[in-house]
Length: 176
Image (cartoon, rainbow, N blue to C red):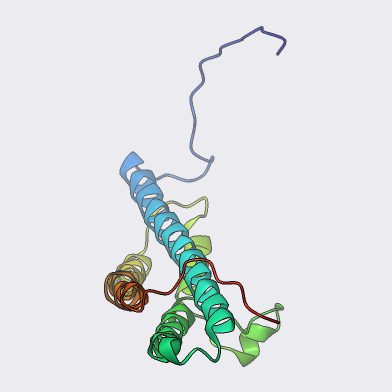
């Protein structure tokens, strides 16, 4: 504060009454780290692909009625559908309130967040069931991550190639 610095050494102790070896704490933190990384990657990917969907919608608006661009718009519609299907495997877009979990099934991100809350407790011992569930969810995210890579590497690449082939202008002034 105001250019002054104070240093102290300290030791972090386990909660009294919990007799767990350091390895249990390490495993707990490792599991929490995996969950946090998966959720962060997942939400970043959803945000990125939502921006792609928004761009496709902009092209739809700008190129509406352009016969030359019709195949491109069809490709964009298919790409949007693929993105939506992928996204709905990850998150439940229909849940808006705490009561919506009754009406709409949780998706992968909610399952990971629930597991995180189950693991992030004072007792660090990771149960066999929690470890197995984490492995299942990480495998599911891995498969969906590969689908995201396919959407980007194939679907978006095809859309971009078609856009270049059609020699459409980058900036379009739509007549009103």
